[in-house]
Image (cartoon, rainbow, N blue to C red; front, side, top):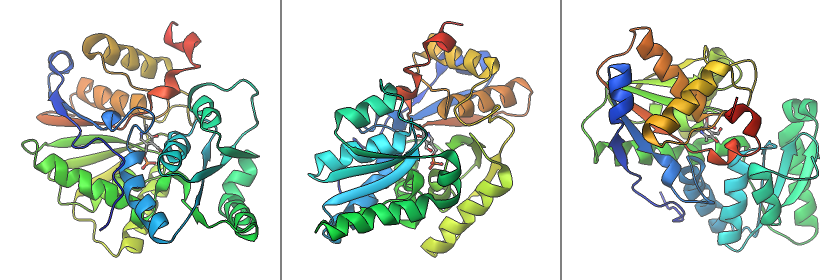
Amino acid sequence: MPTVSLARLPTPVHRLDRLSARLGLDLWAKRDDLTGLGLSGNKVRKLEHLFAEAEAAGADTVLTTGGIQSNHCRATAVAARQRGMRPILLLRGEDPGAPEGNLLLDRLLGADIHWCTPDQYRTSRNALLDELAAGVAREGGRPYVIPEGGSNAVGARGYLDAAAELASQAEPFDHHFVAVGSGGTLAGLAMSALPGRIHGIAVCDDQATFEARVRDIAREAGAPLPADWWVDDRYKGPAYSVATPAIWDDIRLAAREEGLLVDPCYTGKALHALCSEARAGRLSGRVLFWHTGGAFGLFGRGAEVVA
Ligand SMILES: Cc1ncc(COP(=O)(O)O)c(C=O)c1O
């Protein structure tokens, strides 16, 4: 499949020695947080495929949608600028005025930002994106719409690639932990022949919703789901982007033991799930933490970091 080169690949795989000792595991990290700086995290692998399709279609404008602190929207805006395109973002929430974290970067990049309410986002974000795209076309532009999280059959190919990359880098793992926010990353891994059990850690919604989403993406891709995978929704905390004190404790633990920066929205929840399963004696052997990025989500959360 054609791709546009956006990510620094392969990303490193390395052992987490001190967390291994603390948790009684052979624990490793796949550093997809290091796919780049502005263009960092798991979204970049998806965007390599999505931008290839956009460019093949002759697009000059890329539209996508997400939460106010969406890593995917920020990564799409960076990629658009790197490829000489115009980014348009539909964000859930209200303009806070002074931007922080990912929104600060969206503003710096000059993305054309539109706002919608949580209700509109839930019921009609795709229709709203299509309306914005139709407006671009009426003005003579050539729009390309990327769905929430870049999670469709095209984007998920990025994690089929990642599974192949991992197989060339390290001995097989018994367990994989990865955050699930829109399902594309887990879908790509689940479509691969990756050995070991893949624990998709939901950061919002529930197990049934995300397992159905993964199956939908695989159906759209016309691909089977041969890996051993499931979605665990016990570690999502009270709401999307809200982290409990126990999640924050493990965010601090990763920073202080390993210098690993994980965020309260995605990777902190996945790491907390891994630590909790290990502490409960339900995990053993070689375990891989997929660090999918998200560090910009720490900015603006100062009160919780120092709590
Ligand atoms: C940092 C980070 N990790 C993990 C995820 C989850 O990936 P996916 O949306 O493919 O489920 C996201 C986005 O949702 C993310 O921004």
